[in-house]
Length: 389
Ligand SMILES: [Zn+2]
Image (cartoon, rainbow, N blue to C red; front, side):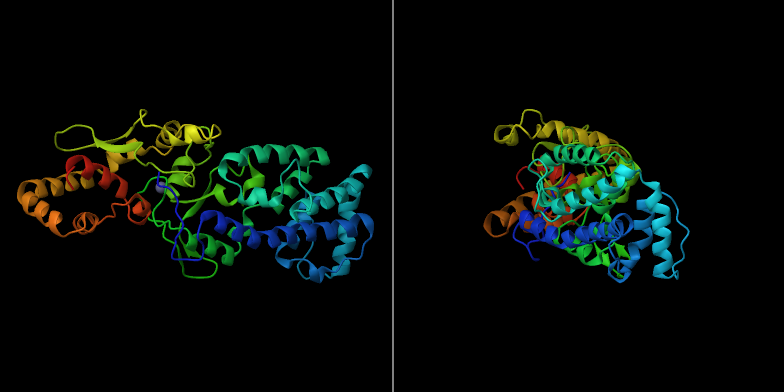
């Protein structure tokens, strides 16, 4: 678990400043979806004139299927007049009489919430998009309860989910690129093994991370585009291992909050060759977060949750024994052959971190672990084997 850091060579001074900029970019897309759906509903239920030219054409089909909750047989080249007739005929009559007024009321409520002119029990869109992970689950419960009560009709839930869904970043290369370029994540924060460097080779296709939703889209649909809920991670961790399993702030560490630090370290399982490692979590380390805020669960517990979920012990023991044995040989080589001369050089001139970087081809500062795979493993084992370095 490597803490996600900002790329300070880019646009923002802090993650919070970045999250605010991200919010300003996603907000218009979210509002556009709600406004389009509202305009279509006003036409269907209230006879308000509708100009299809103002509706986002890429989403027209999706809007209609959401409102009707069934497949409507219209063709892309159907005239607007024909489409309007079809909408009236199919959608108007499928809603109960009471529902017709309710859906318009719902959209008005929703739009004022999205435009941040109305708070729902103290929460507005800005909170949903930019709030830190510790409050998000609670927000989801409050909003889901509110929207469910507004309209008993089943089809309203998917409409609200769609308006706030992940497509605001996934389908928008400008937002997606800004998000990925400004985070200093080149290696998966969950495993620190696989590269996830972001490279755009086509406006619609990228080489880069998959996006894990820390709080799942299934159970937390209103948080699908929330800044701190999106974890750039490798396919193995996100899909192969985590899959449908849930991560929760009580049991798992969100990489935006913290990383392994000194609380969890890779150690050798035995002093004999061939070497194997295990991840040791130190439950005696003082936990600063515990003192600062009772809403944050103990780091040891959440680190353990992630180690178990992402199978870090099994993977590091079985997949990286070659690297561990090569690393131990490199350490032994320094000890036996060059120890005194290297110690002398380091004492006089050299910067230890520069030597570490040159000799082990990794960075020694935890802030840089996300740049090269296995940095955490290397640093922990070298610290243990060569404490003088
Ligand atoms: Zn991973």
